[in-house]
Length: 244
Image (cartoon, rainbow, N blue to C red; front, side, top):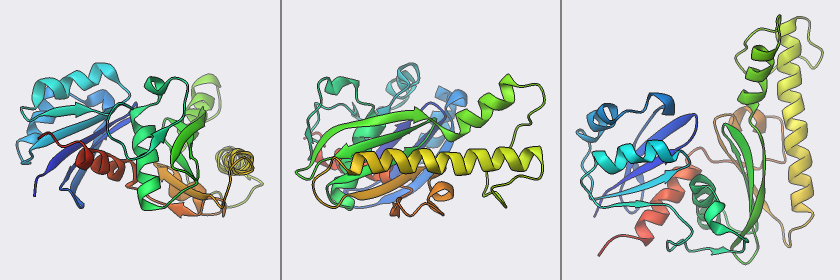
């Protein structure tokens, strides 16, 4: 059975996975800003694979993989065999991670579906009942919002995000946590509610990304947390587009 190197290259972090046609075998993650050819080669020297699939939203970093791997390499685009339809005016503008999420949720959880991906931005991607990607929503990410407060104010501290003890903060840090977590749940709930109202059939709502578990813990609208949704989507796409 052939093995793949899967690359999920996003603005904040880059995930690498070794997989075969059926399952993910190994994973590693590191900050995208620290991604270098030497670092990639150190990892690749330990892994054996026949094919590389790159899903990237950072074009200048994609070149590192083109230079560093000797195996056949494909990049995720809507032109590949995805197993889903694309009903979108300019398919080439859909991010590779969003394509992978759409492919993955349709295969793993069924349709209609909404994927909520908590990354640098939070993205909502919608797959119709007949298995077509039909569009989405993009909003500022949770980490970006709290970092902005820290950078743009004189007295607000930088905080690590976690579940607040109460909605009424008894310190600056607790007040910021309450605003971030409760406020973000409100944002996600409202967007999901508006999307679901436009879909035919009972939609699956699937969360993934860095803050998925934290936000979903007290937000029942997020029915499923699937941490490997994007990588599994890349694995599915790789399997459908193996070079002959």
